[in-house]
Image (tube, rainbow, N blue to C red; front, side):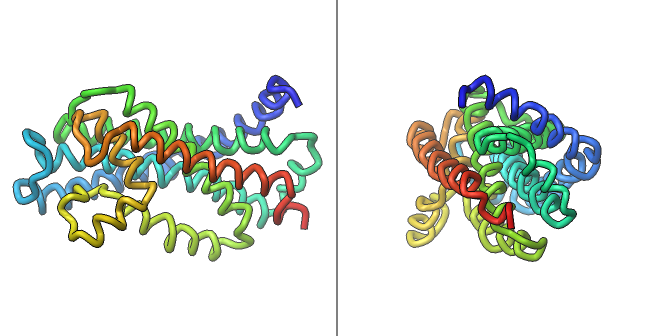
Length: 257
């Protein structure tokens, strides 16, 4: 199937998915922004001046990019996963199954909408938290690249979770036991160099760490590892999860029965 046909098929589903979360934007966009601000107020007040990270960078400045990226990742995952599980439970998934949409069109639509929501929430968090302490913009290209690639990866993971889950309890378990721990152990609130040796090694095995660290390097020009290494790890991780998601879609995994 040609790229033009895939894109033309994905467009209406992508538009539907974007409108789905935008119609309840107070819940899907504004609420996560408020949550990130609460994290900033609590952790910033408790640890500012007590934690030293990069030279010339306050803890609040260090914390802001981590909170932005955490919000991007969590909301990109939530968008694709919640949409699929809702469609399964309400039964309206059948209306998509009778269309001639290809697996690639499904993938582009769901992941594309997840990127839009993730980046919209991230932009909101950035605008609000920058009032507390502007974090700086050393290399905006890294900010954009890791923001887009990170949200794409999480949107793809959400697609996989939504295909696997058959009820909200299973989806919540996937998020609580996989997504949340990996996110909080990725260096959002700290530099991994401050961890004991064992946890330092464990953090290096977490692909979420490379998303956060690469994204943060765009603000300060400093990071725990080279942004090029982070780009390689995140890019390879995305290829793996995208391959899995497309294979599941092609097989109709938990979609047609």
